[in-house]
Amino acid sequence: MATAVFYHYHRFFHQSQQKQEGQAKYQGRRGGGGEAADASAKEFDGEALLRFGDTGSHIPVMLGEVLDVFASISLRSFVDCTLGAAGHTSAVRSSSDQYNMPWHSCGLNAELKIHTYLKNYRDIKYVLREVDEKLLTLGVDGILMDLGMSSMQVNNAERGFSVLSNGPLDMRMDPQASLKAEDILNSWPDVEVGRILREYGDESNWYSLQGKIVKARQKGGLHFTGDLVHLIQASTSGTKGGRQGWIKTATRVFQALRIAVNDELNTLKETLYACFDCLAPGGRLAVISFHSLEDRIVKQTFLDLINCSRGDEDAEVESYAMDLREIDDDNEAWIIRKIQGLNGTILTKRPISPSQEEEKLNRRSRSAKLRVIQKV
Image (cartoon, rainbow, N blue to C red; front, side, top):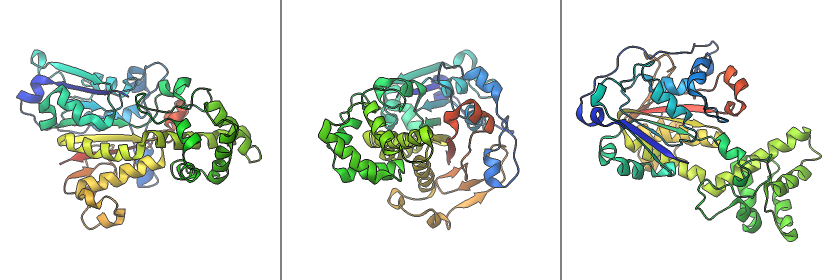
């Protein structure tokens, strides 16, 4: 996965900035039914998707909501940690006039520089240092992390991510990494295989699958995604749901293996800290997660970042109550309620979800959750 950095050299380093005033242009509406409903009941911005979402087979998730997040801040520099097909980045860059972002306000004096690096998002500090040391020193104004699998990755059978295409049991995000999914399935202790299915996949049938996976080693092991899918189909043939039953189980198993192969949860937590460190005062970090494990880490880490030291990162959410202050008045319509801490502000007390219209258009968006934090 590539990381993209773009910024106005002249504006970022040589001009003083004034705070953007007024309310961000907002394409949504507030729904009824309380806070949670407000955060997710938005009018689908189909126009934005038509303008900026033409990235082949990959549709950027929650595009309008991402534009809202960065619309009202002085966005002199921006980092997309998960570039993919560049749908979000293209939209943020192209929507400067519509949202009154100050990309063009310096005229010929503002030199737009764009850099892309084939680096994991955990390497954001290295990337910024390579682009320009001053970016790391002064901080960047906006950072986006879209944690979802891109359609290009899923549709490439050789990567081993899809339950519907036969290919090697690879699942590495970094092709240079050594650990593959087939290594876990064919050589790791059975208790570790079971733990991965249980903790990373939330798979209720983990014990039975663990036994069948270990037993398959006696017949040569599992080396292709088709081998694993057939094993899952045989294990779920007597359960309810038919074809949908085994697909749901296979999806959970594949997710669990992918997380283990790439150490995704630990990487996510470390990257959230690194990204927050790289923000300029007033800068925003937006994270789109796609399953409960990711969302829980983002939620807990955001609470830790705005108020506590890293030594307190395992504390329960309730322990923050004495130091945090909820705020429900804001001039940005997409912000329903936020939490103010010592080091920053969580702008989404409840995560923002896709609209029903987007879910119908893009089924992969159904589980998406958007959370945003701003540095003081």
